[in-house]
Length: 362
Image 1 (cartoon, helix red, strand yellow):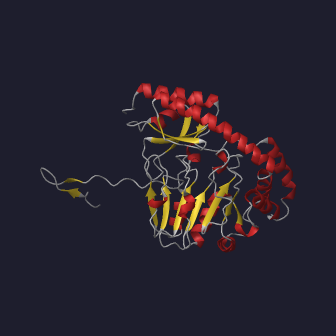
Image 2 (image 1 turned 90 degrees about the vertical axis):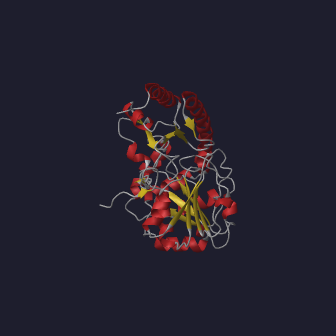
């Protein structure tokens, strides 16, 4: 074993402070959603799809004897975002899109903006790419000037997970010779989607990744899509396995991107915004430092000097998402999903009890 590093100081050399632990990029909220706990660690809205969607999926079981046919689902994406079919790639969830991009692209200088969803960086590293991290400080809003000009691949979430902030100037990142990947998995949770770039086929190098997982409780079905320049989409399609998107996922895409469900999602986004405001106010009053500016169905939280809060909430039957696996955050950080009044009341009462008890010294 190597001896610990030392550095000079009064009275002789002293052990150097340990290097900070590398975040576990493969950790996600589902690992903390233990059965029996109130699950505020996962951002999926509800535990099952709405009945009208479930009905369509059940009827779709009769089609499982045939290979998946993507045409209707692709047409639905085209109509939803006013994009030609050549700029659309259907994927087995957003995660597959990130893996395909990592396998197909050959970036010389890749930048992932953090704190943010860690799967894109994990996919890039697994494919052998060096990744540079741009770690933002509160309020966690990206200024395009912060991105190094030599970056030829930039990955950023909008709204970002776990901060929930919306970046309003991402179009400024786009330029010839650079690929900009915007993860819009939670874009439909922002009323009106005013800052979505999904319809911007005019921006050079722009790739937008979308998902149905969160809004329609389809985490187990794995359904999403990618929008980007036709030449790149063609390369990604060539790298994708045949029939990567299941028949049931295609039915979900066709159904959820129709006009009625899109309008329903917009109404739900307004309700979520009201619930988020109520939760933020209650947590702040309880002594929690809430990350500023969330527009997503979750809040980034922290109690300075209290890294024990998350574990203490678990002992009270509530699972929240740990924050220290996101680059730039610490063990004091945790993320909670936004839910209804009953869940909010339970979480706030538990937080008040944890803070009143004081830190765990064991």
